[in-house]
Picture (cartoon, rainbow, N blue to C red):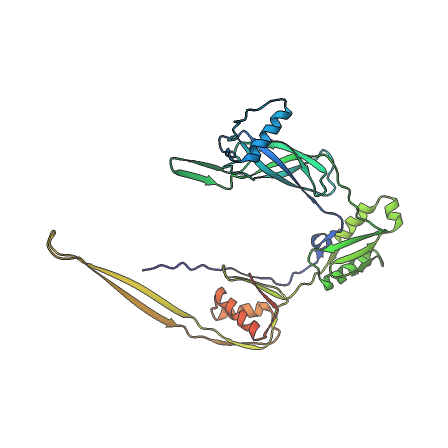
Length: 364
């Protein structure tokens, strides 16, 4: 008999949130951003898990490094304990010279593991080609890789490693957040209604200072008194703490692979009647083996296979949902007739095709 595993799926329904949201949590100040850094480096000290001999660029890098140390390497230098890596990091805004940031190392050769290695001094540059940080230190991969005798064992991803606080900032990046006595606050999820409410919330505290430029940006006038007295930080801090009620699109997100449904609070439906029934098919296999009664007898062993197929159709109940009921009412009604999450997905798809669902239906 074949056994089937039934996955119980989680339905998450977003109900109206009471209270307001801070501007700090839904928007950013234009010009305040991080910058991506990258560099090419080599990791040394590996236990024979480095790049192989045919990885030419690793051998060239090791040769050039030794030459800078006034060492003339042999033509047959081996790189089994060395691996070429790409080093990446993010330079946070307002970070100062001498501060440290985390870095990530990714093997670009055919190395087996970076475990136990040490990154040699590596300059990290930005898209403009300028060096903003230098990295060096012992690599942590949070796992291991080992093998031998035809077997192997691995935990996590051994060809990618981290060095916490592994890079020192050498050059700062200036941030220009005010232009023509104005700053701009940009919504993380642009929305005309939310932008209008944000401008209104700001104007209640700083009269006639804010204007919604578009669905994603609010422009705020900063008085000359604030900039002359170096009070811009305090001003932005007060703006970030202001609260408003955000708006959102009516949307249902469905993941058919897991049976997950996420529905927003603004979802509404037209008057619709729903009937949904389940068809259950069960297949049972039975194997009978008939052997001779006496050992070493001249009979034959006979194997007989039988299959039993049962089809059961459950009765469907018809329910009527009135126009503009909330998603909470829809969920309660569907749960009352015993509809599973996967059945709900089919129902929502059918309601969308019938133009009864007043929301976007997004299938992941």
